[in-house]
Every structure is written in C-alpha cells, then in structure tokens.
Length: 108
Image (cartoon, rainbow, N blue to C red):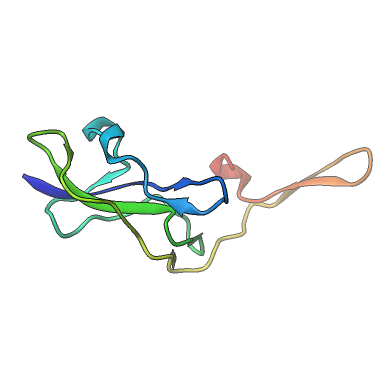
C-alpha cells in the first residue's frame, strides 16, 4: 500500500535545504507516515514554530517493498497555528546577571 511519508531535508554546502537520497530510507527511519497516499500530518511542533521551505520533504512510500517509489518534494514553509506559550518563568542569579528559564515545568 502506498502512503505519503515525510523525511527531513538536508542542507547542502550552501546551507540550502535539498532532497535527501531516497534510497537511505525505510519504514523505521521515516519522520511521519500517513494513513493513505495523499495525506500525512506533521506533529510535535509548538504553537508559533516556523518551518522553512524544504525543512521537510514528502513522497510516496510503498510499505510492502519498504522504500520510496517517487521523488521527494519540498514541503512549503509554514507556521504552526497558535501563539507560543510563556509560563512558569524562573530566574537564577549568575556571576554577571541571571539565567532565565521559560516553561521549565515542561523540561525545556
């Protein structure tokens, strides 16, 4: 069954995102795998995050043969809906000021 799949783009020597080598992927190292050939969700980003063109690449992945059967195409840039949260602010004095942590209750 063909499913849409997403992988990370790679930066070339000029720092521009380009498509990775499709032969290097199998089901175990895909970032996201859709439920059909036409849709796949990117999850786990925070509200307000901005993703640039080519940070992710999408293609058609064959689960039976365990490889991409299409070229990879850059996912257009986007910003995750919502506003970034700032809560649970802490400050700890340092020798020359303070170290300020935001959302430290969430391990960040």
